[in-house]
Length: 503
Image 1 (spheres, rainbow, N blue to C red):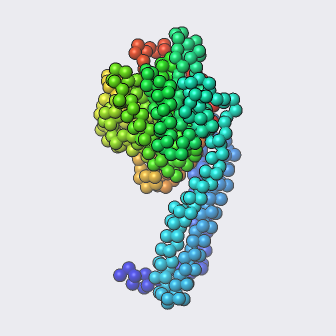
Image 2 (image 1 turned 30 degrees about the vertical axis):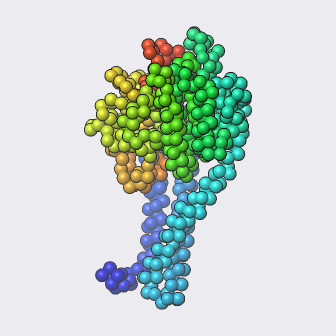
């Protein structure tokens, strides 16, 4: 019936040339007018968002550039559409001439062929070409060393002369990690009591040829440095480049006066957003392997001689760490005492499952699960807000998520294309403007664009968690007898190592 309808009313389309010209004029005029008019509310939204983050909003020139970009994007879309239409017409003519198919049937088959070719091209050739090109760009940096970074001499560090992991094999971020942080002398001066030399263990991509080989070196390093004799052992799945937040590492070492062992392993040299798009399962698989291997060795120790087992993950490192657990009870079953996950990507399986099953009446931006018995969520606006979320009673394993309402890494999802999320229907979070609305397709690209500069905002907003990581550690892993004065002392001693190429 549909086929007969199309054939019967085929004469309706295309319309006469005069009608076509009028339609084109109306569409162009409406498009340009809409683009100009939308700049007015867009400027107001941008000013509100900038005010919420305490930064200056874009000036008039920025909005004029927006018009130019809009014209270029529009021209690209029109040009692409015309190329596709011409391709369909070409295929349809070939089918009609060779097999004498009806026009509508030929156009349908031609359209199907073009769609399949586009999907194959995007998911195959272009996708692989993008990853190959990204590898050629970022792989050379992994072999370099940042200015001012030198090989550690302390045996407690991987890459030292006595280490099983060579300095050259640690990679760019691995060398930054093992060469950074406080030493025993600095810790003694800050805390006023004799400190131990902190242990930092790391395996880079070039430490061994396989994940299993790198894990073997990692375990040998833990044994060599007597890491299992320390008070706290922190497992840190890394971000895409192998980066470990220097503030998070330094904070826990200051809190425990060096009686710590921190361990990480690189699985890629690509920035997190490329690793996420290209092979997110690699990060999950590697994180699971590392956590399982270290936990297995730790569990063989007598309970009275085991260090406190903690887990830290930030951004893609959070996703990697969550991959080791099927569900929340697994974290407690493995006897982790403290887990701190910062800025988890929306695709994180454990995080998304907890948010979806949150206690009734709680917001997606700050959910509550099982009344906070094991896991809690904080918008991490300041120390008082984190302390409120972490208030007693909170016995047993403590799992804390730090997630800003304005962090696009946390809230971006393909579902934004055609589905309105709860966080855009509920009262807004602490640093998100209430004027933000959901629009099909548009919001997906807006939040996606924000991801490109998610960390380029002041601390406490976006994907910049700054010194709130210290308060997160205090919430889940404070030493016995810890006081607010201790937190203030450590906060004063923290300084920001260079983290400009963190992801």
